[in-house]
Image 1 (cartoon, rainbow, N blue to C red):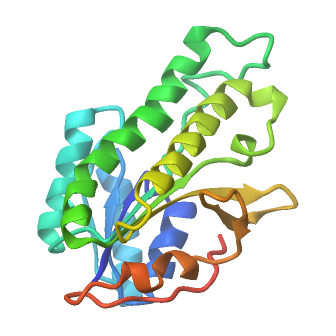
Image 2 (image 1 turned 180 degrees about the horizontal axis):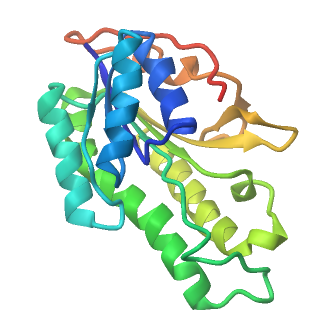
Length: 228
C-alpha cells in the first residue's frame, strides 16, 4: 500500500488530507506534538476504514522529527508522499506589520516553516530518490502568495518556504519525484490550490500523482480535489 506522512496533523487540514489520501488506499502516518490529539485522529480514521498511526514529534525538534518520519517509514514500508502543514502559535509569535517586523519576529516562523520543512524533506528524500518516485507537498497560508500586511512575519517565512519548494521541484525534474507548494485561494479559503514550478494553480492533487508517482510495489492513485 502507498503511504503518506502528514507533518503537523490536526483536526482540520491534517484530517482532511488524511481522509482524502486514505480514501484512495493510502496508509496514513500522523505527526504532531500531542499524542492525545493524534490518538483521537487515528481513532476517527480507523473508524472510517483508513489505516493510520501516530508518531508524536515537535517539528522544532529536528532529531525528533527525523526520527518520527523514520519510524513511520518503518511502520508503513516507506513514505510515498510527504505533506508538511504545521500550524504556528500566535501566542508565541505575535503578528507584526512590515514596519513592525524585526529579525526576532521572523526567526521562530522561519524555523517552524522553512527549517523544519527542510529537515522533514531530508528525512524522506533519500528513499524517494532510490525508488525514483515520490511527492512532496508544502502547505502555507495565502499570505505566501498574496501578502497580508497584518501578518508580515508569517508571510515572509511562508514565502521563503514557497520559493524553496518551487526550486526543489525544478531540481528534481526528471527524477520521478515532484514537489509543490499548496496555498488557499484568497476568494475561497477552504479550497486548496497547488502551485508548482510554473506558478500556476491546479485545482486537484491528481497531476502530482500521475505516471511519475508510479512504483511497481505500490501502484498509483489519482486523487480528487482536497476540500477542508
